[in-house]
Length: 168
Image (cartoon, rainbow, N blue to C red):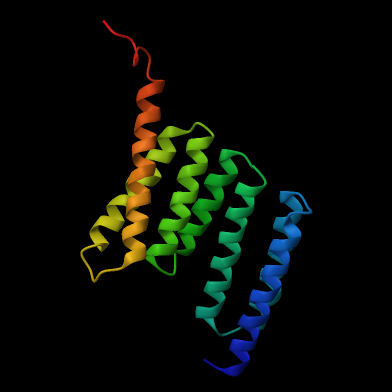
């Protein structure tokens, strides 16, 4: 890694932190505009460095998703931001699980049990298949949390079915 690239990444991290702090003072639309501006600024400095550019795009996409949650955006916005992150890919399984669990929890809280269950079961399968690899305590904990979310979604789905609680 070159000194210039490290300097750019360090400045980006500080600028992103600043935008996150400022986001509490603005609406979602303004926050997204500021994040996009920040993305353009730092991507222009990384011409020819596709690895760092991808990481910047990922961090901006992740931050937009988190801001959508914090600003209580609609489910369609959540879906779009989660889709954007997924298209960029995740730097590792733990980051993917983190965002799928955040998304699953948000959808469950907004009453969209189907999407919550889908996200939880998807990441559970991936974590279970990767759990066979060398031990990773974080991955193990994420799997536990994914299973808890899946159980909550199943319980909520069962309670919302007509006649689910009636005795015959």
